[in-house]
Length: 134
Image (cartoon, rainbow, N blue to C red; front, side):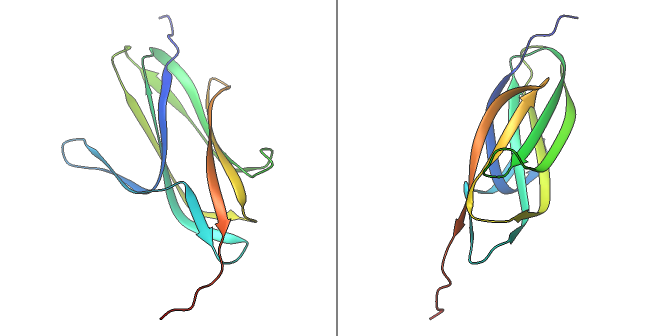
């Protein structure tokens, strides 16, 4: 079987993703920034969804969360992607618990297909001052 390299259509970062009755996927709390008043900061849960399509065959996919220096890997997950034909879409969802961010800055979500980087997506971790509650 000849492999046809798929496209990575999008990457979404959110609080949670759920498979609903009937097969629909619900994404809750989409975001691109994490705010913290102190560091290191621990983020309790985030979900990352990638959609692959227009390909055929078996592939190795890898997702990495990198520190702002783009060298330190904070999280990494690998899996196999199988697309039976070019009309199939595959939504890959990974859940990440208790991620520690050592300092504010732009962190990076990177996706790889058979070792080739397909995208690099920023995740901003922002230091904010404590505010008085009225």
